[in-house]
Amino acid sequence: MSHSKKKFLSKIQTNITNPDELWDNFANQKREVNLKDYNRGFFLNDDSEMIMGFLYIHEGKPLLIPEPDLSILYFTFIEKSIDHIVGLRNQILELAGNQIKDSKISENIASLFYNFFQLSSNFVINLFISLEAFNNSLIPNDYTYINKKRKKYNREGIQRSIKFEEKLKRVIPQLFKKSFVVDFNKKFELLREMKTLRDDVIHTKNFNTDFYASYKEMFTKYIDFDFKNALAYTKEYMNFYKPNHIEKCDCGND
Image (cartoon, rainbow, N blue to C red; front, side, top):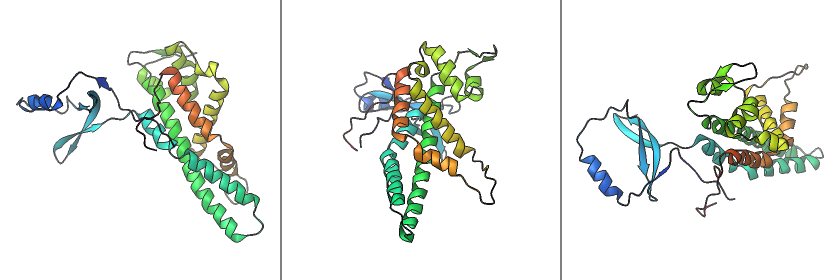
């Protein structure tokens, strides 16, 4: 299947045509660098683009590692599994429909459902993280948000204290003077449902009154969930506020 383009933080287009010469000039400058003050650096790729990286000290030596955009990192990770998840669900339902006291079929369903729930819960958690990381990345350093009770929040306060739904309904629309929630309310409802499914797993609770623990309601929600549209609507949400944030990769590889 096609996939989305990987992106990194602070990509800057330059007119550098000879990176080797640039490196030689830098290497000849004999000066000490305080890594505590300069804990980031830039890569220069073949397209003359500079990409931000962070320094990691390994065996006393500073290594520069490219810093990916987290919202895209998580999105591209889970989009690979969407067809597998939907396929597993279809197999489970088809086998369950043909189940006539056949132990082998029951064993197959059990194995398939293990795989389905592991992949689908991982999908929901990471898609939610992708969306949350995107929202937080949109908040300017000097921005102050005032909630309905007139309480003020700076950038850090918004990220730590403002709930997911309030960010989607109030914080981000105030910044961009437009609202995905208002313009595409039905799509927003699916994103809210995704958040509920994520909470069901992260904060797993058992309210069954019988002796045996049962998570039937949670499992049922996952079987019923619209995974493909959740992925599509998350992409639409991001591109609504930041055009072309999620783009199809043109590398030619599946």
